Length: 351
Ligand code: SF4
Ligand code: SF4
Image 1 (cartoon, rainbow, N blue to C red):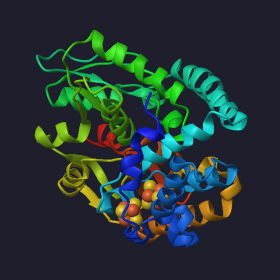
Image 2: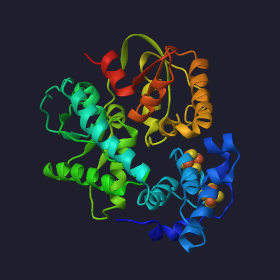
Image 3: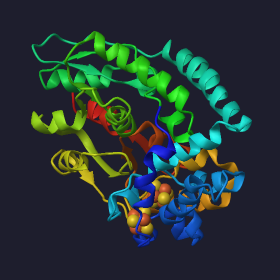
């Protein structure tokens, strides 16, 4: 299991340039260096060298990080702050009964009761047979929505879809620093993948895609090929025409890697009017939904995103991450509709 200590060179490689401050949505609100990567790395250097002890206060600063990676994309030292924060959180997790309780509750209540009972009512459809086959990693999204929209889209591309019963990819446990439960999730997913041999894995959720790709950090011998569904749609030049005129905006999930494909679809679909919202790529604040003690900061963040959606004058906001979808829906309050982009395409384009 990886530890914060193993990444000390990465932590020390922060040049303290402060560029991360200019893109961090939390720093823009707090103006406090302890809440952005530079401050995190100064504190974590102290922790690794033994000058500082892990404390509630330090954990609280780490918790404020939205794991949006905006700073990592901008960082001249190329540091993946989400990874480092999770390893630091793991140090706190070991001695925190509260964090352990939240993890336990999430595992038992959300994953074992809510998702599994929802799954009883979702419809799975049979894929058509084609020479080219892919494995659909639906994770939690599949338990809520079934596989029909993915099968429809990929069958239209001449691709057969295999839908094994995958559980969560483990991201909620990883960001909390619960590495044991993250590892359990990862091992279960990999065990299923290995049954199917060398086959492409397809996701519709940006966070699942990023997490599955991150498994290589834990097992350097791992050889899996993970793709997003939008890549297939673009590659296969599906005839994209909505059955009726629609006006939409798009919230770009922080974890998405192939936004160019999404943009291409948004701009090349007949009857679809795409209205870019201001700061379309700024974090929705999902991580804040669980940070009740920081509600003032988080409300500020949600309000900004909500106003940008409303000002775009689109009736529907699309996204491609289950987490973003949940956060956007929580604050829509009837002002706009939130839909998953792949579900939207399957509903309005493909017969
Ligand atoms: S941008 Fe990167 S190198 Fe610069 S202060 Fe932030 S984390 Fe450190
Ligand atoms: S990941 Fe996002 S919230 Fe966290 S420090 Fe970087 S920019 Fe700020």
